[in-house]
Length: 554
Image (tube, rainbow, N blue to C red; front, side, top):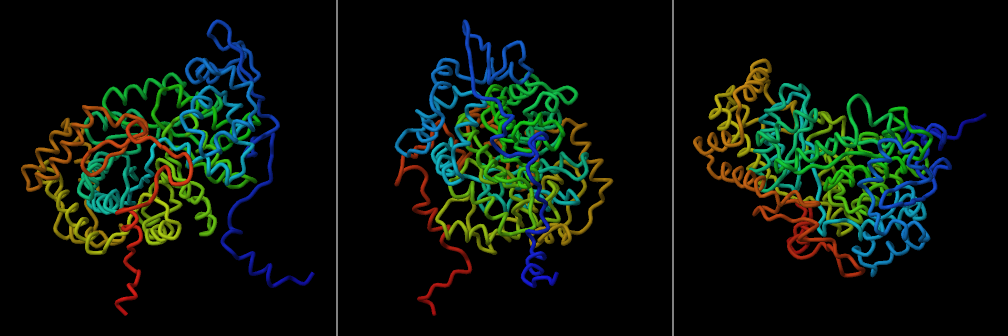
């Protein structure tokens, strides 16, 4: 057969490098509404759930037990199970039915019931519901700040720029585990230079994360994974109860945290039980709710390639974000890991959360170029800042970022590097040279940074832990070495840790350390003209992109 030149050209398009598979229900390769998903049911006797989604109490696994005991508002559960799911879906969609009324119903649903409700919705309806069901009125976004060399000066400079651009939270991880104390400190201090009030975390093994938080090196955590089948969940020592205990350990020490889950993880681990990805994710979200955690990082996250390969997969991802909000959880809605070769496709995937707004539209926008991202590559990175800002401007939506001027970025990166230089001097760590400060000020990524002595850095990073360095030591080092204003911002952060107000659902800080959360700033969307709108000073900032020409000047 003579080949079509059009098909030849199309075959070379980036989209055709992506992986796609046909549905395979028995192995869980189905995004939503699998024929193997259970039908909704609940039966309560003497205040105890004796039947849940077709299973008798004798058949409950650990996850069923946990959800039935802690995860469902039993007061309204039997009422809600009898309601028509399409009727409930329309209530959620109807703008003038208040969110508070909806949450009363949704928190009383079973996992199968909540899936049945969202299965009725098309993707536009899901987005409209998400706009109403988001917990906090204001939207925000989060960054990943890493580099291949774990360079602390670069991390601090990138964090400062990220904070200046608008990220309310920033997260780091490590290429080499023993570097972790440096990465955590660099991120936290760089962030406060860029904009006081930014929360930071260091993604590590869970016990180490908790230790860093207790030392005052971090303020929150989110990489506490839960799964929707027992075989996957109990992978050695985890149970829903152990995760709940860990959550309470964070809260008791004034650390914000959220669980992580997402469609596709069970398929990826070979234990999907033939259920749909969305149903299994709903179980994860019920575990999160039952554990008393304020929020979740979900939206497939690191498993995004799995739902993205099957029909309706991206719809399933935004559906799981909606379910999180229906359970009254903060939703950090992913848009982090790269999953496609197509710029068109990655933009559309993000639009599902960007247009309606979520608590954190990205739970990992890479504040570095892609090659420096130690989270395996991101859907958005530092080279996309201008595109992202223009999309906000085009649509008049608040994606959490703001345009900045080059001179502002240079100034704040330079200060962050100098602050790290002073901190290292104050703590007796390997010196940061003026050459490194200069390089970090203007660097695009790690390729533009001079090499550090990694052996000495690793020894010094571990020495921080062995010496028992804590937050107060950081404050002293900065105050005594020329940066009392940054020392004061760290003190403000630690005061907030003691007060604990930012453990409220969906809490962030403004630059003056005022808590903004679902408690004191709840989403009040009830139709046109209500809820969060990009207006006033914020809209003026979004409009003012540096490349826009003032026609009056021509």
